[in-house]
Length: 376
Image (cartoon, rainbow, N blue to C red; front, side, top):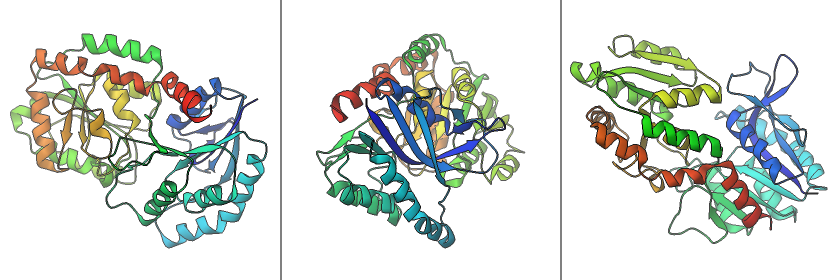
């Protein structure tokens, strides 16, 4: 019997029926891991707030959720709360690791400042660290720099985004899974049949509604298009939520482009948007490799994305997407003009380019690599 204990900051909630649900992307990934492990325990944070539509339940009784208090944030009070909870978190981890066969710790996160050193120094349990952030981030927060430094010094496997010249041997490039083989098959059919026509072009943004994710720049870039260019865009779908949502809505009042704010939606609804959309615009300042890029690519939604972290290893400029070398209004405007001016022939060429790489983002590919490279 193989037992895996996962430790993360993944947001979980209790819905009206008393069912535990969690961040959709992570929960879906763990749901697929039951083909590798007989039991999975997930030590993560339970929030007492309204449940977002994107949250999902676990689909197997092999998965056990172990709650810890929700902590984290940027203020001094938030950081002190993390330190205050450290003994309880360590005690919970220690208890569940005793009869587990492996662990996975998902970094970077606030609790990683003390959990990673604890696992490194005080635990002999086999396991690996999943660093989901930007491994090559130049100006990372101090806590993230510390976690990365510890991970580079210790000997257990660390799975990271991208491939880097100074990559230690124990740091393996691992794609974040987000697609089933059936979705890849359907995505191929959609990409082969998707057409682009001036006046019916649709764009989308998926992510947290905050300046760091670049929605401000995207809206400003839309404003910089000529009146004629704006008429070529039928709709812009914004998926996600945040404190600045009303501000962004106000910014689009006189845009002369129809912008629809969907808030948080289910995974299926996001996929439906990709299927009917021509491009996803994500001018984020720092990312690992967002799963939404792979999902959008799969359904024939061309990515217009920042050239940061490992994104350029999968998105090739003017081949299957557009890379923003500078995260600015001007660079986004240039990319939008390129999308608008695509001929039907160039459009289909982009949709069919590098599609083999999409299979690397399937759950089956990810599970096979865990089975063959991490636990055997």
